[in-house]
Length: 517
Image (tube, rainbow, N blue to C red; front, side, top):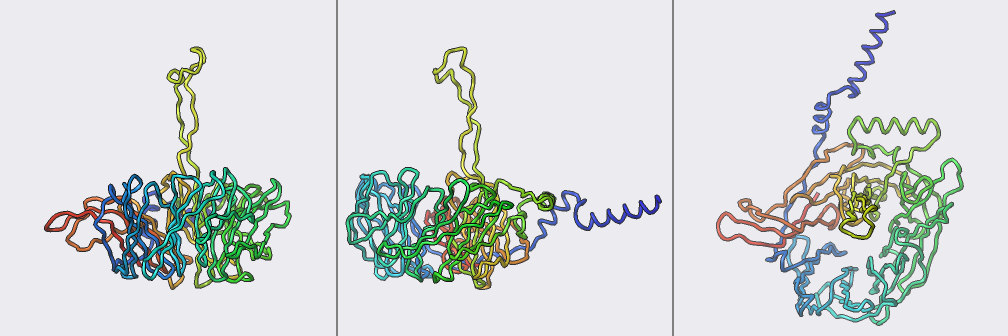
């Protein structure tokens, strides 16, 4: 018996070694480093403005025709009268036009939005109810401005979109959602009574230039059942369609639909892509897709091929095994994932969506009651309070669906576990002609990137430095770096740099640098 047992044990040991279970830590790390490296982006075009971050600020906005707008302001203009400059660049970052416009005192830029025939810049004023709107001709750079009045003093504006010469805004009055329409020819901003909910309920506020409609997606729940409402409005503010997506009552699943994103296109072919939870509207268990008729399909995170690749190989295996055990017992394993969804991207195979997994972060804050002097001596003991510290992002996923909402492939990008003060996307995404997806973000004076393809595990550690004008130049310092998706597989990196040439004096510039994947 003993030789047979030893033989079986030896066979199991060989199988485990081949599977990588018993590999030493350094060997597993080496395996991670040996992953295929995606090709770095090309950097063919660059533009520089003589500028420094102490005196100037710049807003970079890609335009619908794949050109680029840069709005430049003096930081001191809030206190005095200064011009601001608008510059439009072509795809080679050559200047098409540059115009100057009056920047009125006590006015601050809120949003820039553009459509094919108009560029809008919206400014706040000292009055909570007053707004100033610049309407810019994208062909010439000439502009007109108009003043407008909000329906309430207590509105906090969040987003702006433009469609057919009209401006649409989303905002909050207290915790409540408000949707507004600003007609450049009318002084009063109109409140649209068609959308109700709280800030966290809004999944989508977008314009569809193909169907000429403004679209909203709002999650709704009565504490027991959930549904997602999609509402479409024309440019006159009239409701042209309301659709409710509601899961079937299934006491084994208890799926709770959360907010989602809409695909572009004709109403009958639209797909809603969102997240769902298990009995919760906070934590996400997976993604769902649905047409506007309400045919819902569910895709658990545990079933995605690459969702857990942000973990170490051993932790990834343990997590998948844990899910498999719970599934065998018909008990769902619910983890505390929260997902921030990006807008849907058109894809050669249908649609692509990117989501980022994040966690609210808290830190202990010890309060000394002796200093506060609020309590009698015998009650003065140190207190510990949890203070909100921001949002930590662990990884991003990208999923590609066909036009019927079926999942075709997925992949992921391990992030740096950094914490940010506001909940906003940390990576930029673009779809290339071959269907691969580039994810990029700036960090430590470099651009970090990963190119996602079906059924490939690529390196998460790739980065590239921003190219300077001359190879002999040296970057002394850099700050306020950013990167935005421009068009196709093209991104635009920007920021302030202090550059020292091989000969001559150093210069400080605001740069624009293309990154083409």
